[in-house]
Amino acid sequence: MQRNTLRAIVQALFGLLSRVEVIGLENVPPRGGYILATNHLGRLDAPLVFALVERQDIRALVADKYQKDPLMRWLVKTANGIWVNREEADLQAMRAARSFLQQGGLLGIAPEGTRSHTGGLQPAKTGVAYLADKAGVPIIPAAIFGTEAALSQLLRLRRPHISIRFGEPFTLPPISRQQRDLALQENTTEIMCRIAAMLPAAYHGVYAGHPRLQALLSGNGALAFNPLQTQPAHPV
Image (cartoon, rainbow, N blue to C red; front, side, top):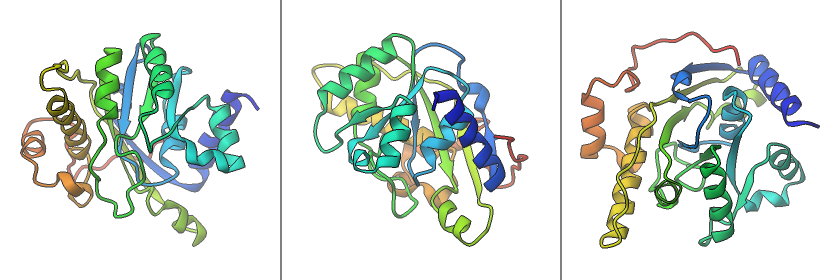
């Protein structure tokens, strides 16, 4: 099966089985090297992004533990994903990701490294900040919620309501060698706070109350989460 056929099937399934609310999709540039950084709540997160983003050159870093699952292995291969060992510094995967970004590709990554089982954001790893610095590319933050309960709702014959917001691309400050670890952590916090700002408060997790998050929420950002804001379901 070709990639375009797989995407069409995924789009059809989301459209038939769920109600998807999408805000800010226009913030994803049609070309150029970017990292798309998202929170991670469920197995539908990556397929949702794959279905919505129209770029042919979108790929994702995927934990190699899923290679044990024949269906997941086939899906990742068809979607041209990049396997990564999240338990150690996977230099081969990082080199492949860096090369892809420098060639102008769009790479999806979940900075937390694994799904959150509480719904709230977990402490993120510094890999995304490191890769953005090495590849010299901006980051597009994306916030997803509703996928954490989507599969269980489907099993109860209910159509889940899923929301996804894409923020404006931003560039992180360069990493200095003198204070490398501190700079990586600060840049990672910036990424996560920008994601958190587009989520309801219940999803802020370990970043709840962080001064940078509060600054983003008190600003005039159009995508800062507003519980009174409503958007029609997006035709995936």
